[in-house]
Image (cartoon, rainbow, N blue to C red; front, side, top):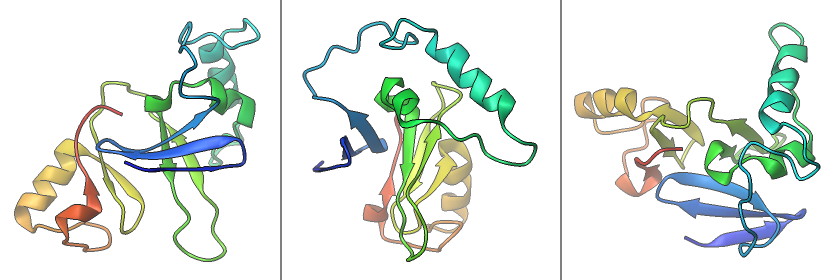
Length: 139
Protein backbone atom coordinates (compact mmCIF):
# COMPACT_ATOMS: atom_id res chain seq x y z
CA UNK A 1 0.00 0.00 0.00
CA UNK A 2 0.82 3.63 -0.13
CA UNK A 3 2.06 5.82 2.64
CA UNK A 4 1.57 9.28 4.00
CA UNK A 5 4.23 11.30 5.75
CA UNK A 6 3.76 14.06 8.27
CA UNK A 7 4.54 14.98 11.88
CA UNK A 8 7.67 12.81 11.77
CA UNK A 9 5.79 9.56 11.22
CA UNK A 10 4.98 7.39 8.23
CA UNK A 11 1.53 5.87 7.98
CA UNK A 12 1.15 2.74 5.86
CA UNK A 13 -1.87 0.73 4.79
CA UNK A 14 -1.07 -2.99 4.58
CA UNK A 15 -3.11 -6.15 4.25
CA UNK A 16 -3.02 -6.28 8.06
CA UNK A 17 -4.37 -2.76 8.56
CA UNK A 18 -2.77 0.62 9.02
CA UNK A 19 0.59 0.98 10.70
CA UNK A 20 2.50 4.01 11.89
CA UNK A 21 6.26 4.07 11.88
CA UNK A 22 8.77 6.72 12.82
CA UNK A 23 12.20 7.15 11.28
CA UNK A 24 13.39 5.66 8.00
CA UNK A 25 12.32 2.31 6.59
CA UNK A 26 16.01 1.37 6.49
CA UNK A 27 16.39 1.48 10.27
CA UNK A 28 17.14 -1.81 11.96
CA UNK A 29 14.46 -2.87 14.41
CA UNK A 30 17.23 -3.50 16.92
CA UNK A 31 16.28 -4.94 20.27
CA UNK A 32 12.51 -5.19 20.40
CA UNK A 33 11.32 -4.23 23.85
CA UNK A 34 14.26 -1.95 24.56
CA UNK A 35 14.03 1.81 24.13
CA UNK A 36 16.71 3.71 22.22
CA UNK A 37 17.79 5.17 25.58
CA UNK A 38 18.48 1.62 26.80
CA UNK A 39 15.39 1.44 29.02
CA UNK A 40 12.86 -1.33 29.26
CA UNK A 41 10.14 -0.35 26.77
CA UNK A 42 7.70 -3.01 27.97
CA UNK A 43 8.15 -1.84 31.56
CA UNK A 44 7.65 1.80 30.52
CA UNK A 45 4.45 0.92 28.70
CA UNK A 46 3.16 -1.13 31.64
CA UNK A 47 3.82 1.83 33.94
CA UNK A 48 1.73 4.02 31.63
CA UNK A 49 -1.10 1.50 31.83
CA UNK A 50 -0.94 1.31 35.61
CA UNK A 51 -0.74 5.07 36.07
CA UNK A 52 -3.84 5.83 33.98
CA UNK A 53 -6.87 7.06 35.90
CA UNK A 54 -9.61 4.40 36.31
CA UNK A 55 -11.84 4.34 33.24
CA UNK A 56 -9.43 6.53 31.26
CA UNK A 57 -7.14 5.29 28.49
CA UNK A 58 -3.42 5.68 29.11
CA UNK A 59 -1.74 8.56 27.32
CA UNK A 60 1.43 7.37 25.65
CA UNK A 61 4.12 9.88 24.69
CA UNK A 62 5.24 10.04 21.08
CA UNK A 63 8.71 8.80 22.06
CA UNK A 64 7.26 5.57 23.46
CA UNK A 65 5.11 5.04 20.36
CA UNK A 66 8.21 5.46 18.19
CA UNK A 67 9.91 2.62 20.03
CA UNK A 68 7.06 0.11 19.69
CA UNK A 69 7.30 -2.42 16.85
CA UNK A 70 5.08 -1.16 13.97
CA UNK A 71 3.05 -4.36 13.96
CA UNK A 72 1.95 -3.71 17.55
CA UNK A 73 0.44 -0.27 16.88
CA UNK A 74 -2.95 0.09 15.21
CA UNK A 75 -4.01 3.47 13.83
CA UNK A 76 -7.63 4.56 14.04
CA UNK A 77 -7.91 7.42 11.58
CA UNK A 78 -10.13 10.38 12.38
CA UNK A 79 -13.00 10.04 9.90
CA UNK A 80 -15.28 12.69 11.38
CA UNK A 81 -14.57 16.36 11.92
CA UNK A 82 -13.65 17.19 15.48
CA UNK A 83 -12.11 13.79 16.18
CA UNK A 84 -8.43 12.93 16.43
CA UNK A 85 -6.44 10.04 15.05
CA UNK A 86 -5.92 7.52 17.85
CA UNK A 87 -3.26 4.87 18.31
CA UNK A 88 -3.76 1.49 19.97
CA UNK A 89 -1.21 -1.06 21.08
CA UNK A 90 -2.05 -4.69 20.43
CA UNK A 91 -1.50 -6.37 23.77
CA UNK A 92 -1.60 -9.90 22.33
CA UNK A 93 0.92 -9.94 19.45
CA UNK A 94 -0.50 -13.16 17.99
CA UNK A 95 -4.03 -11.67 17.80
CA UNK A 96 -5.44 -11.57 14.29
CA UNK A 97 -7.16 -8.27 13.53
CA UNK A 98 -9.64 -7.12 10.87
CA UNK A 99 -9.95 -3.40 10.22
CA UNK A 100 -12.99 -1.77 8.61
CA UNK A 101 -11.65 1.19 6.68
CA UNK A 102 -15.15 2.65 6.31
CA UNK A 103 -15.66 3.23 10.05
CA UNK A 104 -12.06 2.82 11.31
CA UNK A 105 -13.02 0.07 13.78
CA UNK A 106 -10.92 -2.98 14.70
CA UNK A 107 -12.26 -6.46 15.30
CA UNK A 108 -10.82 -9.77 16.40
CA UNK A 109 -10.71 -11.75 13.17
CA UNK A 110 -12.59 -14.73 14.59
CA UNK A 111 -15.43 -12.53 15.88
CA UNK A 112 -15.60 -10.57 12.64
CA UNK A 113 -15.74 -13.76 10.56
CA UNK A 114 -18.65 -15.10 12.63
CA UNK A 115 -20.63 -11.90 12.10
CA UNK A 116 -19.60 -11.68 8.44
CA UNK A 117 -20.89 -15.19 7.80
CA UNK A 118 -24.28 -14.20 9.20
CA UNK A 119 -24.41 -11.09 7.04
CA UNK A 120 -21.49 -9.99 4.81
CA UNK A 121 -20.98 -6.49 6.20
CA UNK A 122 -19.26 -4.64 9.00
CA UNK A 123 -21.12 -5.27 12.26
CA UNK A 124 -20.61 -1.65 13.28
CA UNK A 125 -21.20 0.53 10.20
CA UNK A 126 -22.73 -2.07 7.85
CA UNK A 127 -20.23 -1.40 5.06
CA UNK A 128 -20.47 -4.31 2.64
CA UNK A 129 -17.73 -3.61 0.08
CA UNK A 130 -15.03 -6.26 0.62
CA UNK A 131 -12.40 -3.63 -0.27
CA UNK A 132 -13.33 -1.80 2.96
CA UNK A 133 -11.91 -4.61 5.08
CA UNK A 134 -8.24 -5.20 5.85
CA UNK A 135 -8.28 -8.92 6.66
CA UNK A 136 -6.05 -11.17 8.52
CA UNK A 137 -2.57 -11.44 9.60
CA UNK A 138 -1.32 -10.81 13.02
CA UNK A 139 -1.29 -7.30 14.33
